[in-house]
Image (cartoon, rainbow, N blue to C red; front, side, top):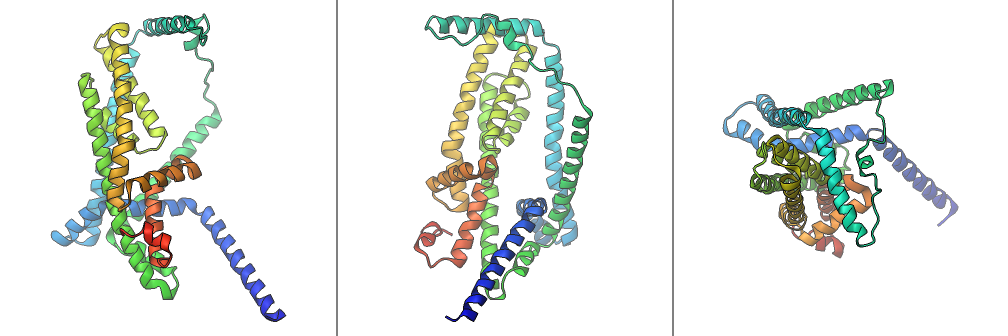
Length: 364
């Protein structure tokens, strides 16, 4: 190899590295737009059965079918929030009627009993002044910066909702539009492979979202059974709310735990139950059953449902979610399964000559 060829090789390598760096920088800058596109793509996959039925079976035009499909999806989401808001208002009204002094006294008494039991075992946790445990330690004030931040967040949320809705409409109307966007950026020699990969990705992700719906329904039934056993008011709405929150890794189950206990306690107070003899035992049982439901979801529902939907082994799914969670946190767990599904299809389409790729993609 002479110096001229060596120089060309170095210049070529530097050019590739520079262009790759610029692309990564560009993608980072427009990451929110890319996020809108992928969310809209996911929503279009969920709405595709309705769109196909209207357009192919009933013979409605694509534009009107897309409008109807989008309207149905928005209506479902709006109906969910329309059930949620009255529940929140009702529970807020129930909480406003509580005798807070009596509640604080009851809780303090329970903490005192726990502390005395611990001290008998030479375990010291609480101070003698138990009432201070319930005293707020911070005074919250509304500042101009907080208001400005709130308006800014509302504006960003509004823009995001409009953008996702707008993009989803066109993905529904033109089912190959997303494919065309990806194929347009692919090298000419790989167009056939890219087309096949996109078809496989669509099929597997559609199965995944159906599996996700099955998980929500399964958890909804479990929560319904738990709340129904204690005759809690608004059982259906609370169970639905907790089931949807369950989709958020780590934080979602914690929020659901707080909500199911708070609303159950509020309902029991409103019914006139005694705090010490009825409410505390019931809340303890609800908490235990809620944790059992979480164990069933993590050990049974998630691995089996996800494994069937994306054609992977349950242990494989568990390890993928664990690895994505360690690497990218809660957000990584949310996108672990769809991300891994896309990765498997890409590996099978372009790197199938490697044995490890053949092993992890044998079922797709």
